[in-house]
Length: 103
Ligand SMILES: [Zn+2]
Image (tube, rainbow, N blue to C red; front, side, top):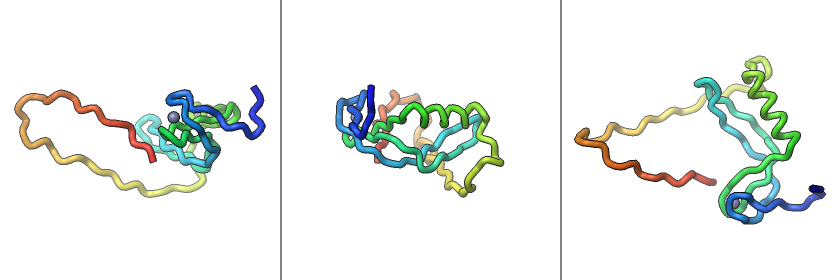
């Protein structure tokens, strides 16, 4: 398993991937944190993001450390929205499936 510039195949859809740097948004214990400039292989078909082992380990290490504030690169303000309340409260309509958003 050598990875000398070879592009991976997406395990989800089999599509081709390109290497890119992405931002991860992670909910951790009710707190939203962002990891910037994460090297990833991104599927051009479905948007799936794959990380190599060192990257995966680094993300895991940050997660296990609880994302210490002192290690934060910067802090940003995030806009938070809520959907309007449903018009009729009569009965629960079946769940509507929502495709995952890919950029
Ligand atoms: Zn894919």
